[in-house]
Amino acid sequence: MLRRYLCPDEYLEGFRFVTPDFLLSRNIRALLLDIDNTLAPYELPEPTEEILAWFQSLWDAGIKTAFVSNNHKQRVSRFNEKIGIAAFPRAKKPLRCGTKRAIAALGVPKEECAIMGDQIFTDVWAGRRIGIRTILVPPIRDRRDIFTAGKRLLERPILKYYIKKKEEVSDD
Image (tube, rainbow, N blue to C red; front, side, top):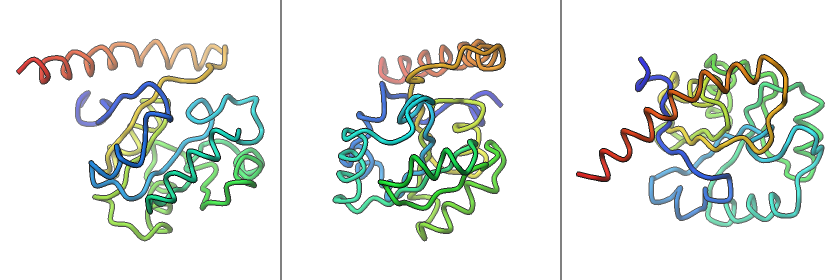
């Protein structure tokens, strides 16, 4: 179960490393995105110029994008005002409903889709459950509540397992 549902396909240092070349080399033509702690900290209400430029680079390469967030509509709408992509707030990840709706809205086969986020138990698991590639990035800034701290503790052994398996493959 660990590998099948919780290990990401890729683990990168941040959204900046998810370039058009990276995605296209993996035949990814649509990217579903989390917002909070993936692209921006919770406290940042709007995207920075760097985030806007990153989106533009994806669009220039023909990569479609959509937000799939567990956050409320007001948060997602405010962050999306300057970006203007399809957005699915309260997606209930890791349930399939929000992710399925986003893929359908983008009109791309799921074999050409990926989801990127900062949490194994929401973003990675949602992608795995629906059968799309998963990209995990470290959280930009964690909330300091007990629930989030607990999830991060549970994620640690999964990340260790992932890193160990990647190292074994690269040693071969």
